[in-house]
Image (tube, rainbow, N blue to C red; front, side, top):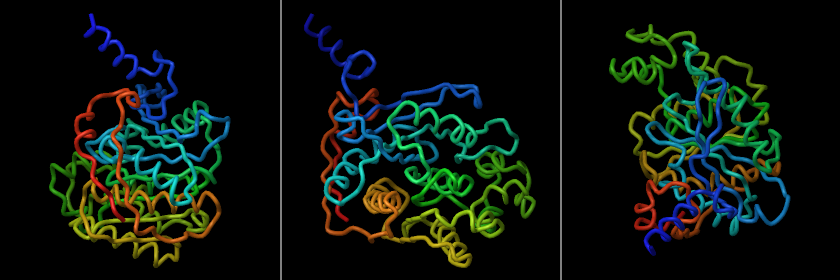
Length: 334
């Protein structure tokens, strides 16, 4: 009998619609996308004082990498603990964080028109979030942050829709120079890039399709009218142990510089892992907060120690990585 009661309590704690509790962290919620013809999942982190007033908040869309999902920023990134600490101690605005399911589509519309993810993001996801939560539904209070594939998305979506975003923080952007793109192995290229940008089964410069040039940030920045990005604040952060991405992120920085597009660019010690991205979050949030307030960036933070606290069972709708979170809580120093 006691065992049955315990199981019931756990079930109610993991099901916000039945428990009646005000949840700050909700994983794997979903809405039906007419554009994609399927459910799209997303997770949410609300500000600590969200339920204490009718105040509205800025929104940051956190985008995950290839192979991860809408829970990864919470489960591996400890994002709620880090953002709470930075908000309290570093003069950063409280924000709503939305983590959408990104599938394997680099947050773009595929060239074949069979999976129009970017259309869904702009035409369905953002309106759904604005109607569900107390957001400030204005470009001046909307930003993106993402790692790897999500770094690509965090950059390309604001570049495509600068009238909808004030700032972006791409981390370890999964982008390729032309040379790297051409040299990708056939199997890897066909599955990852060819299916998205066209030219499956091709080799050499034939891979540089017109659609690819239209959707790749490197080409967009070089070929399009840069006046459209005049108000967009950009902060790029990539590790010195990134391998090929170190060169492509440098290329991205050089192209932005050549086109005289203001941006921040950081290269720190580290590689393609959450240990690196967690440490990028405080500066990224400060950058976004300053952009929301119309301030010039105050500069990177320093001498801050963040000790993530254990996430209680009540805050989650999923137990997928609970054991990892409870047992692996590193101290983060920046």
